[in-house]
Image (cartoon, one colour):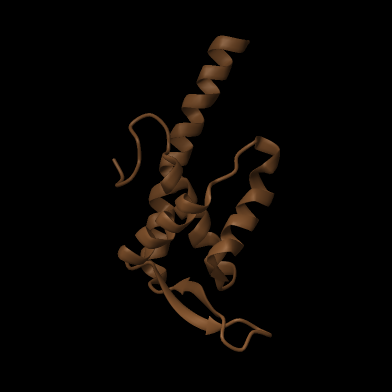
Length: 120
């Protein structure tokens, strides 16, 4: 069983970390960017991750050596610093995503079975 994964369905934090790795692979982002992107992706499902879960997930990815953070002056703001995130260890990021893929497939199978068995 993978670290951070439930024995029944994938936990929210692992789910968020997966998306944060993928979003960071696509571009360097700051914390509220993740929240905005995830809200757009999952609004139609009624899922809105909260601010604190986003940052807890980012901090765990830093602690795991997958992401790193750096500060940059915000464009148009002389003194306002923004914290951005980038991939620190691409191999570890790939390993984590691979591990989560099998858990997502297993969780999806459980959900599909429940739908079939109870609503067919």
